[in-house]
Image 1 (cartoon, rainbow, N blue to C red):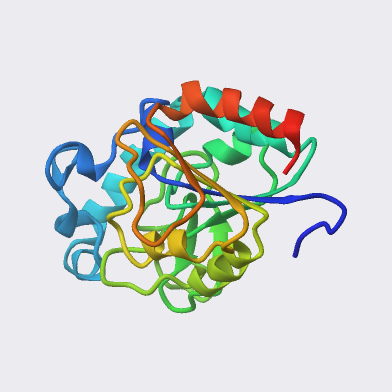
Image 2 (cartoon, one colour; image 1 turned 135 degrees about the vertical axis):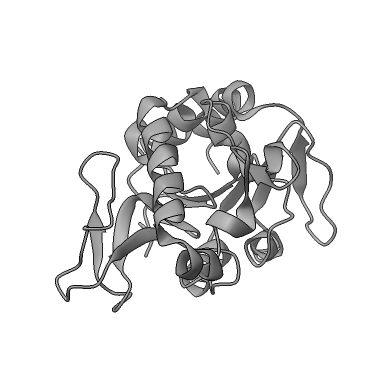
Amino acid sequence: MTNSTKGHIVVFTGAGISAESGIKTFRDSGGLWEEYDIYDVATPEAWRANPDLVTRFYNDRRKQIMGAKPNDGHAALAKLEKEFDVTIITQNIDDLHERAGSSKVLHLHGEIMKSRSTKNNNLVYDIEGWELTADSKCELGSRLRPHIVWFGESVPMMETALEVVRSADCFIIVGTSLEVYPAAGLTTQAPTGCAKYYVDPNAKPISGVHQLEVIPQKAGLALPELADRLIQLGI
């Protein structure tokens, strides 16, 4: 899973790093996401009740994301790949890490630029452009839904993420409030001896996480400096 000749840096990113690129999150306004109640657009029940509304909502989010650009925080993480084996685990559904140049990105909550079959979860497709429609069908003839892990659904990549975190030589937490579980539980899984950093304007010490350097700044400001420090010092 890792390149044994390079130190393994694992980065766990949340909504904060995407927010710096102008992408709003449902936590920005008390449970409303672009004026929608999250339970009307981000649950299996919402899909069954009104798939057209859910499809339209994610079409709008997709269009917004396509117009956004990676920021200095994304670029700094991509830069680390020149010296280290870097795996990014993200709660974000956008593709900004990939567009910045990061090559190993594990999306815990799905990918908005993809769709999947409602009949077979293993049938996943890239979306050309920003729009899914009621006529968008998989090869089995069933309607395509956004490739997103909704509230109330299991997180299929969680076990893989746990394995990755446990193999870290350095663990960086970025732009997350650590309030969404089970993803937030990853923070306690990094090896005891590895260096750990928490980058977020509201970052505070984490119970049970030792050897943690808290950096209470935005990702776009802190990550370029941290990346340069890690490259200079090694891990």
